[in-house]
Length: 157
Image 1: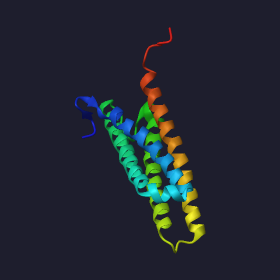
Image 2: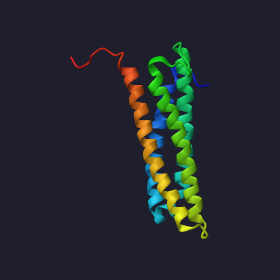
Image 3: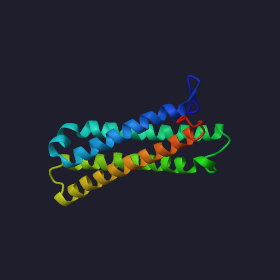
Image 4: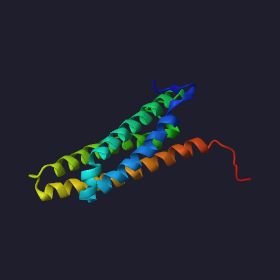
């Protein structure tokens, strides 16, 4: 399931879902966390997008592991892809944390009995996780691009 899509390795295709959905979900999560108006209007769509980002990062990770096996490596012995694989795994964890934190933030905001300090802690945590998620997915993407393009001849001249 994760090896090929229409004869093309699935990993580069799934990666595009992760590198688009996670930063957009993180930006929307941060906006929802800091704005009461946006939280009321966009809370549910933001949670849904964070779920898509979580699925996208997991698909990218799983297809990357399949690509490692095709290259003669493994999840436990990724060789030159070790940094990329580690960051990809951390991206999945951060996407999961973002989904949970944002869901908690939106649910707490919907309850009138939520203590203000708890709601604030959830919002601050959501923003922190959103920032971390973007950093991790960009770093993972950079490491993957470096692996891909380091094999190319010098195109600069």
